Amino acid sequence: LRMQEQTMAGAALALSGLTKTYGPKTAVDALDLTIRPGELYALLGPNGAGKTTTLRMVTGLLKPDAGAISVFGIDATKDPQAAKKVVAWLPDEPLLYDNLTPVEYLEFVAGLWAVPPKQARAKAEELLKWLDLWDQRNQRCEAFSRGMKQKASLAGALIHDPKLLILDEPLTGLDASVARQVKDLLQERVRGGATVILTTHILDVAERMADRIGIIARGKLLAEGTLDELRSQAGAQNSSLEDVFLRLVSEPA
Image (cartoon, rainbow, N blue to C red):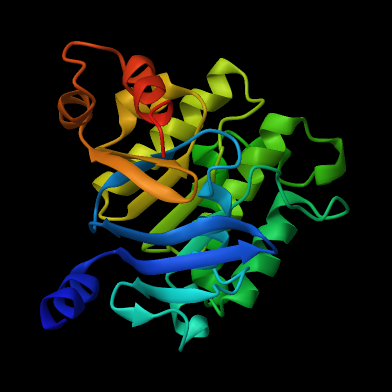
């Protein structure tokens, strides 16, 4: 037990026995998962595997039925406010206020996190320039394309410099140039010491970007590790991540 507590305290995210049920259906089934500080971790699984439910519990949007959640040593079930201060969540659908401009939206979000105004303005300018939204900074978000909205949402998630960034299908519906910008920004955050967790159905992205990959199905973690480690676990040396993934998720429960 003491070793488990030490592991949870030293992890960016540690889940122990995390469980969520909806009536007779178990969406997340006593899930154990540990993610290290400073890594980009891809959580993969078929539709209905429990990925989004897991991440929504981590971010405090859903209450688990059982289990423990530790975020950089903070017990997220006992002190959710402290945990949320170091976490950012980006859902698969951009959440913006259409009548606000990007500058107004970032000012609003920074205020929620109590970021000092001068620091918030400098950070907003940095993010909008990095994401090629600076020229549109005074336009209302309602006129933005899907990609522009996704980038503005990402800027909002990063305005308070979270230590843990969680993204659910961040590249869905984006064209190649916008997807490249998002991927570059995520890798830049990891190089700066942040931890990134993402779900994606684009397996090539996970194969190229992730330090480690976890594969979840039926609410349980089937396998995790580097691509070579997953190949070994699946008995599929020299195979693509797609082949490894399909082999693992097709195995009987």
